[in-house]
Amino acid sequence: GQIGYAVFIRGPEERRVYLHDGLTGGYRTLWMWMPEGHHVLAANASNARAALPALQAGVLAALFPVPTEPVPVEVTSLAPWAGTYRDEDGTPWRVLAHGGRLHARGGSAGFAPLLPVGEGRFARPERGLLFSFTQGSAGAASLQVQQGGAVYRAQRTEAGVPGMAIPERQDVRDVLGRYRMASGAEFWVREEE
Image (cartoon, rainbow, N blue to C red; front, side):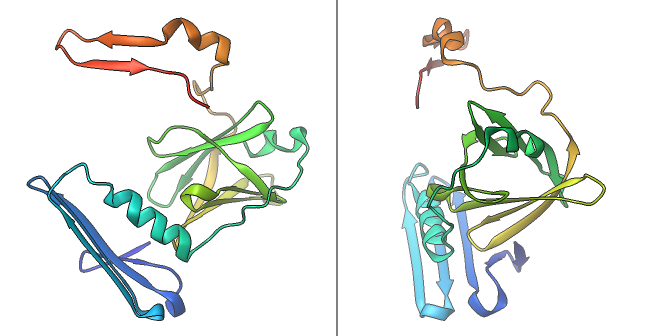
């Protein structure tokens, strides 16, 4: 999306959303102005762990919904979309086919399964994400990602996703459990759907 005077600008010109969020000194803030509907949202929390980013994502997903009805796709039609794509800022979008579904991740986020919603179109409705793939005449695949009124365009730079794979369930069972690092920090590895 666009940024003007540290204000994030989302959506097309006729349906703008202006927002800013922040975290400082243990406080978390969020404000959003949606002129089309004459709405303003302002929140300030005295807790750095407050779920304001989730609130922002939920509001944007409601304002800019994506399709939620799955359509049948041939498993063989997924592989051509797999690969690493980079947008204008160099942010990587990685897509892989696994278990009869496409999975994607943007930047350093984890892989998530995508729902097929049309030819070359896949969604993650709970996050308001829509991935649209196209194949150019020279065979170069491109990707458009829409989320919360923002649009990111990316070109495939690598056909595969080197070193990226989602392990099979039976291959991760040996590492499930609680771990303690030398620094004393603890973490858990758990299995989720």
